[in-house]
Amino acid sequence: MTFAATVLTLYPDMFPGPLGQSMAGRALGDGLWSLDTVQIRDFAEGRHRNVDDTPAGGGAGMVMRADVLARACDHALAARPQAPLLYMSPRGAPLTQHRVRTLAAGPGVSLLCGRFEGVDQRLLDARPIEEVSVGDYILSGGEMAALVLLDACIRLVPGVMGAAASGEDESFENGLLEYPQYTRPSEWEGRTVPEVLRSGDHARISAWRQRQSEEQTRLRRPDLWERHTGARAQSPSGARREKQEEDEA
Ligand code: SAH
Picture (cartoon, rainbow, N blue to C red):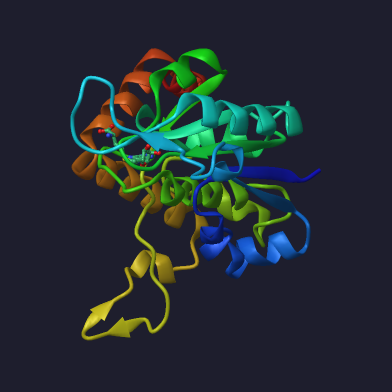
């Protein structure tokens, strides 16, 4: 099974870009995921092949045309009917590790990358398109956001990550931030690796890491901590994961 990514963009040369390197690049070469880019301009008509026009009602910038984008989207939907079509958008639902896991377990994704002031609303109303944001800031185009989403998905595609376990106790996977990590040398600039990590006592190490995870989450991300403790209070039997999934759904 491979994860098929289709990217609709005015800048296909931006792909695979950084995803052609390292783990994702090797996996692409090994056929664990595939990448198709679709040049949106190929679906424009006329001598100038315009993909954008001035905003109705006035204002700065340009807006991507619904008719051109619809043809590009219909092409992607026909080519990959099983893959969800996502529009990278600052107005979308914030991307979470839970959503990434769900996407990575599926057949792939088709990603529409906006430019200029974004896309004509009628496209989003007329096609089965889900809007996804990579954070509360504005990028100049959806391509970087698409690379972020794809990177997060690809590392979870079976066979991509070296040690299968290494994805599991990372930040967000259990609703907590990760504990601090250390490696050799055991002393650097007078700072030592915490004694417990050198003790070889696995139970103690694991208890220390759990405590650190909780402490770091409480201090750095009160929003996550509140959700974590709320979920734990409601279901001491370990149904925490379910609660979290509900919250994120
Ligand atoms: N005028 C829009 C921003 C347009 S930015 C607004 O204020 O909401 C141009 C394009 O970059 C968008 O169409 C979108 O595809 C992409 N983009 C910008 N910020 C993004 C974000 N935080 N997450 C995902 N995509 C983003």
